[in-house]
Length: 147
Image 1 (spheres, one colour):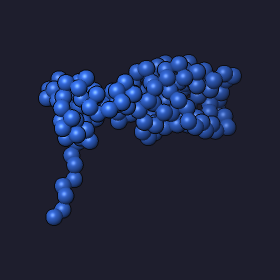
Image 2 (cartoon, rainbow, N blue to C red):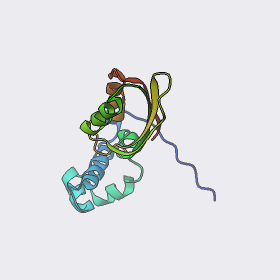
Image 3 (cartoon, one colour):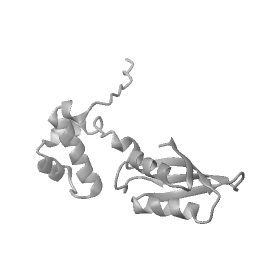
Image 4 (tube, helix red, strand yellow):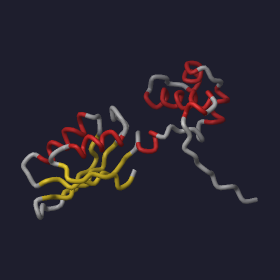
């Protein structure tokens, strides 16, 4: 018997049954180390362990699709002293962990830079970070390639 392929939906959290939000919170508590055991996380969020195990693989906050993983950000930076340093400092200030940097040799007054960024420590979402980067005078273009 062939197993059905999973289907995914993006749904605003307020319309979901409360148990799904609590499972997501319990997972967060475990991932951050605020709780060490499933029992502790379940108790703290007010759900049963069986509810946690039933839904843990199916419930994931949308931010986890970009948050808590690794994204590849491509930027076109102006060819000016300190441009890359300024961008890297901004990423660090937001809690991003730069894993890789690849910068092309500047040409035509700009250089392409690709950054592999771990997003687990970001103080806000990736979308907000990209918006701030795009406002920087040294950034000509900025987009997520993968993540």
